[in-house]
Length: 587
Image (cartoon, rainbow, N blue to C red; front, top):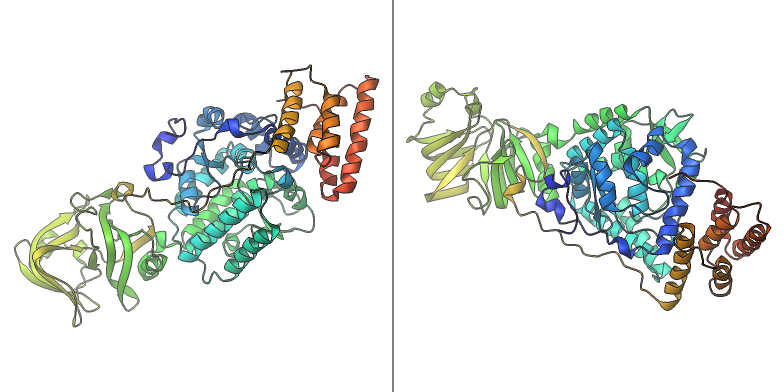
């Protein structure tokens, strides 16, 4: 096991555990810790006035420190008190898996941290985004329940092949953008590829639509009034650039509604508009409104068509409660109603999310097909027939019978037995010497083997994934590309040592370090580095009565002015750091 478990994590199914990786806390450098500290100090200084009140309260409750990157084990000890847990993963994981983790009250945290060059924003998920963005806000019970429910519904959303292609493209961009030494042309090409995919997605799938809802709420949501909104979305809470940008008049504020599901986003650019929910309870109201449009609740012909188009493992549930899980391949419809379906490959039958004994993938290794609907000329559906009705229509053990369904499906064979659900309704009928015909086409024929027919007047639900998670081997995720770790070099290692020395000095671990000597090293060998200079300035300006320290602070500030002139894009970061330097923080 690559992580320390707890009661929340113990409930995770095996197929989700395949995404978990060790945090490797020792791999964080002193530069990484300085990046975390700067972002957190800057965020809290600004977010104290513009974030929803749950954010600062959540930081205290979840035990997330401003001074150091959170340790997953320490976070979990505190998160379990609010019924949640966190695990480390490698960057982006498939959307359905991400949402399923949420359904189990588990936050997935990309344990890498953005480079200093991308301190304001990165498209890659990182521990600042996840730990400082998502984790604190779940301390609000209403929002936490929304997140769990979103995961529960979102993991059932049906996707298509283009969704996965877009996921892979976004994951690729996030990896190369955070890797050092990648040519700018390669990054630009990856961004163009995403833009091309986004403009050619065709009819959006359920997963694409619910991903939009997730983006405009969980990632980029505002709450309150249009005139005075507050931030609660993790993408904004963790971005010192966008959290300020989003509060300007340049970003349009729109009342949150189900229309957000049909509003696409571009992960590579700042958002031109944001949605404002009046409160967290309204988020759940819109989520339920959207869920009512999904095949999960609509079923029918459109539902099974979505599963066929997805080419992924999915499930249909019939009106009897019988659930068929597999890769749906063929469909026969009549008067806009499905009358026959067929899966290919391993298929399992279940009732109330529990596999029916004797009807696992071993039994139905080559697929499963069955007519559904009503018998021709008979108003009473088979599932509604009493034992007396079934006998009257010769649907009885030992009888050789011909059943003609509406839509031209005919079954001929000897009935061996029937299987009933808990309500006493027939859900399966098993035949011997059976032939299944549609018009003049033979769909199934067997003289020796058995044929199992599903009973159900209609399809009431269709959703992504299996009914019973134990029916299939779902541990099959293949990572095509992993995050690229920065290669160690002598120059970089020396700079890390300087950062570590100042960190040790600030924490009282080694107060004999010459800060002046560290500053000279920076000026001579790392003239473009600004963050460590800001930390040195902070330490020097702590004691305004000490003239020597104030002279040192002035010298550092003068050097930072030179850095600003040489690298204008970091000017505002330096100014913000200097403004924060005199602030006293309580942890």
